[in-house]
Image (cartoon, rainbow, N blue to C red; front, side, top):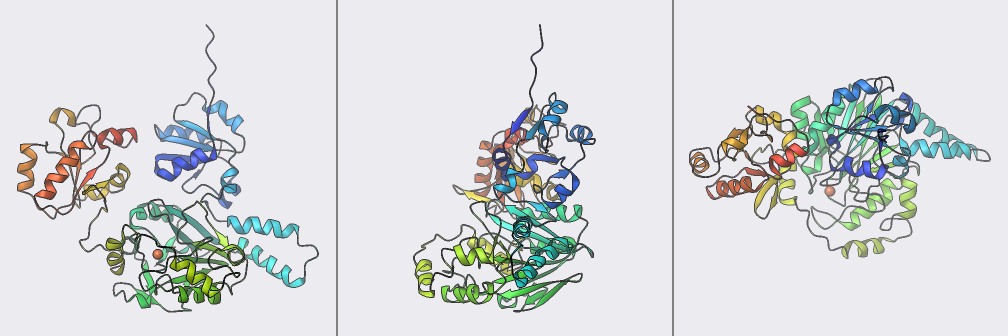
Length: 492
Ligand SMILES: [Fe+2]
């Protein structure tokens, strides 16, 4: 009988984006386009691989799902058709068109605008031609730029660097994604000099303190924040050097009184002062719509129109804008609106407070060190602190170092069965054994409870809280989800 001919699996850009957004570490994106295209723009976290290296790289990945980005998917399909866990991304150019986050040394927006401008250069005045050549300088001046995304708070973190000296700064890191950010900085071979916060955030905890601890980089936030643990209290107009290049801090209060915008090589990192077609709220943390109106209109909107705007957040998948576009189309702060229009819009917003505000503001005033120095930052669901498998995976090194304890509450016969257990977990079965353990252990110890599907570990967490434990957490989904994610297990 003739064997059925297999066909390779294709995913659209949108499908790949959905998986990538859920957790970029779940997939390995192998980009086999020419190296110069990869360097200009690629999916954050993707690895550049030559077509000759592809097979070996796939062998190395084992069971992890590999997504291949290629200009000629048909040609690659033949080679990977017999492999499981390999998919091809179709129409990869659409990633850029959909405005999904990109990493790369070229600036996507500037690149596209530059191309457009090149075409329409004829019949321009000499002044305009000069501003056109400014974009050329921007492309060739050796700036390294990466935009990273934290999905829970929709926060953008940026890495900027001077290519010649390799000196780098990170802007608005989030504590949960510090490992990811530092890994990228290491892969890029950069020397991190500054950790900058655009303001005292209310929706996430800054990774500043953790990054300083691990790299020795200097932290900086507005002097007005009065944060004593910060290395540099920034003032309006203050300059920070990356090699021969300069980051300029521009005070843009209004969302909070501590907001700073950072200007670097034709880009502005605006935090929450100016968002894409929006702006940060002005109803708490010394916010003032009068002040924000002045900051944006008098300071940001006086920058050149082709200055690229990189905001602190975006909730719709947009990644960048320009000062010119925001002047024309920002529905709140655009030049068509008066100060009174803006104040009325802001007063009618009636937003709920961010869910992390109680925890985030005090922690950020302490450079991101939570008051009790917790390693994990769980969500509270129905009164039970919870983390995901991915959160725990990121902190396995903390478990190994004894900063958190992993307690598996299943029966002994389940501990080493086909699901195995999380490396470093200790077996303490739910029931009399766990109760005895909880009665005799340190109530300030950070413990993650694990079981098969998350039910018994939830009960263990509830029991521990009743006994006065303050930092116990349930891992949702249990070993079933851990195995579905193909994370490492032990069976001994
Ligand atoms: Fe904010």
